[in-house]
Length: 334
Image (tube, rainbow, N blue to C red; front, side, top):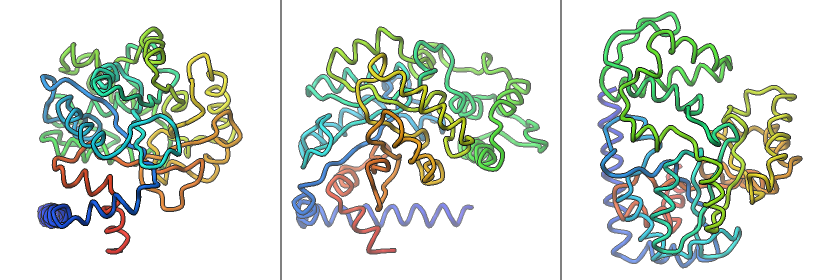
């Protein structure tokens, strides 16, 4: 593991140097030019005030501080037109997943540049005072006190941030073998109750409470788009045929009542989550377009790519990604 981390860090440093050189040689500007007819769809999750930033892996995975988001949006606005019109050349579409109240912080930042965005919301998260099931599990591993716990019939040591993230990922991977999230939630609750996790109340209210109906209505009044993100944020590829159809059917019934766009975002949104069967069911619903949570070289109307720049710390990484240079480089190095 140690040697693997060294290799990963070395690779990052080499790439950063390459992006730096490409930027100052004008190569990245050239890639902006050759990709000028393309639209970039960017994905973020939770924008949080700088005062609430901590070292937990849950923030590392899905949170972006307000100041970093402001910095990123300044770069995006400099290079591209930010729009909600899908398919517009030389533009960027900003999207946020899950529908927690941290969306209100994102709206404040976007308003400074008159930017509009898409907010994808699972139906059960509207007016919710409890996190989605996946965030309950993530929060448990991120914030449970340090110690030894017996999880899924094995002794687990919860300590530093890395070990917490590894145990969380390991447990989530078991759901792709047996989709039994209710049992997992019950097991974790018995080990250490979710309500007792040492999470700051103000942070909890932004990060783990869903937007209210009135807050969603206000976002729509401001010109933002509210899109479907399933009913419960299930792993759609693990639902049976009837469950999958019912999920899209229920989402379809919320068009206009909740959603004001036909664009859908798949929960999790990676290849193992978005199977041909999932895309087929989506295409037979009220939704006419759908986005994944990664780059898709074989993108279709129901498997559009999204770009994640939320974890970048360097301007050169962001510029390389937005210009298309990063993806070109990945294709060359394969």
